[in-house]
Amino acid sequence: MGKRRRTVRQLADEAKLDADTAIVSLWDAGFGKLLNPNDIIHRGDLNRARRALGLATRRELETGRHWMKMLKMAEPEFGTLLEELGIPPEEQTQKLPHKAISRLKGEARRRGIDPVTGGAVAWDIPTKESKGCGTFSGKTSGCISSIAGEAPRTD
Image (cartoon, rainbow, N blue to C red; front, side, top):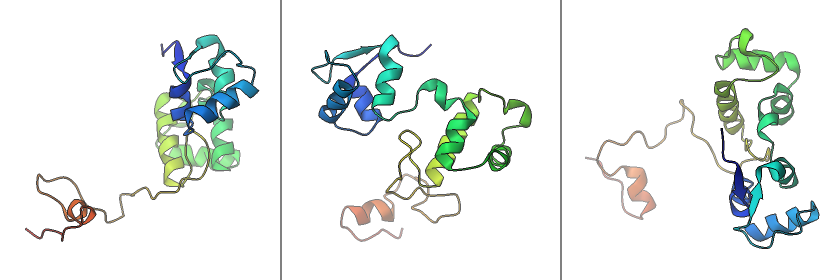
């Protein structure tokens, strides 16, 4: 079983908001007793708080409807996507298994969608086909040294 309670700061970090903005949003949703980022939101209020901050609840993450809406797909396309992600039809039930949720989060990132907030992602996620810095081999790679302002090493 997951954590029974979370702090305002933890939810704010998950929603990619600063703590003050999260507190104000929570006040608007009826959480008037929260005054500080370290204040605890108890388990019974967590779903309401998550919705107030624009986050999906754990139960919503387990539904295909949530992912179809986030990925802007119709049901037949979504079924095809699940099969492409290696989720067999017998696991495509009302409640998606954890491996399906994990793979759908990865697919959302690949499409430039933040799987937590549903908003557009501003960074590029490297794919298997992209030519990145490569794997770590124990030597300083050209990418790291170029970030530090040095010329890439060729050894």
